[in-house]
Length: 59
Image 1 (cartoon, rainbow, N blue to C red):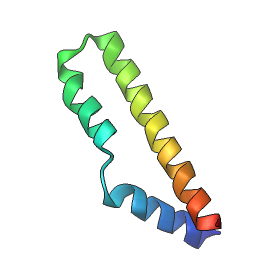
Image 2 (cartoon, helix red, strand yellow):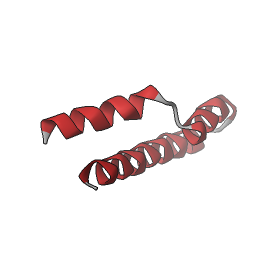
Image 3 (spheres, rainbow, N blue to C red):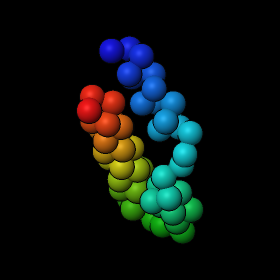
């Protein structure tokens, strides 16, 4: 189980998500409230990607 988690995290950090990269690039041009929403959206995207990697590991 821990090996699967390690593999999933290494894959997660190996290739950046284009959507997260775009949101991070836009952040400096947004108001504080929207920047917080962008941070939340990035976290959600990362969790979704991690869940997808776990699903692939199980299959």
